[in-house]
Amino acid sequence: MKLSPATLAATVLTLCPAAAAHVQLTSPNGGETLQGQSTFLIEWFDTVSHGNEVTYSLEFSEDGGVTWQSLAGGLPYTGGTSSYLWNVPDVDTSLGRIRVTMSINVFQYYQDTNDLYFTVRPSYLGYGAGTALNGVTPELEGIGVPAVGATVSIQASGAQPGALAHFLAGSQSSHRPAFGVTLLTMPDLAHLAMTVDSAGVAAAPVTLSSCMTGMTIYLQVVVESAPAFSATPGLACRVLP
Image (cartoon, rainbow, N blue to C red):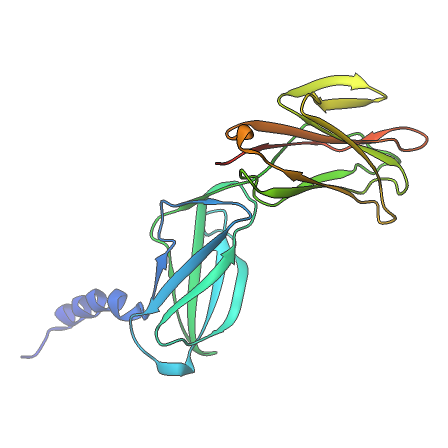
């Protein structure tokens, strides 16, 4: 049977999307909620086999695919079914996308992304403004997923070396002046003092007990800098079960 040009064009348009797939992302595929600083297994498989000549690369977008960040490149062929253990970044987005690219050579490649967006919830949220010393504001970072039983690290950086740093933890936020800085945390849970090291860093390990499940903890570090105090912005986290 001889096809008319119109029929042939319709046939080609129908077949192209299926033929162009070659690789399919299966996880995440949309609707998932991931935890920042945790790990997640990205999975994909070859829908059209090209054997061990292929390599794969992975990218992440937190803005629905407007911009992309490289996660891994040059991943080898593993029999047609592949996975990659991803360290989920500590971002806040409901527009998460993963893109897998199958490369055969520099001229031939195939891609797939998750069908629907996924969500990433950050472990820690910043709030309030810190107090600078000589134009430098110390920064506060939470390292590790704040789950019951975990030991996380609360780290202040950019502080004056040799100064005494006060780590404040509270069950509620606060905005009141003290010592020339604004206290952003009511220190009713813990107050720990330590010396800032030569790199301007002070870090405190915190173990989260089961009695804190579901609690939101507010954190701040105030530094006895000279000639005036400095302070980090606030940091809040919810203790996960």
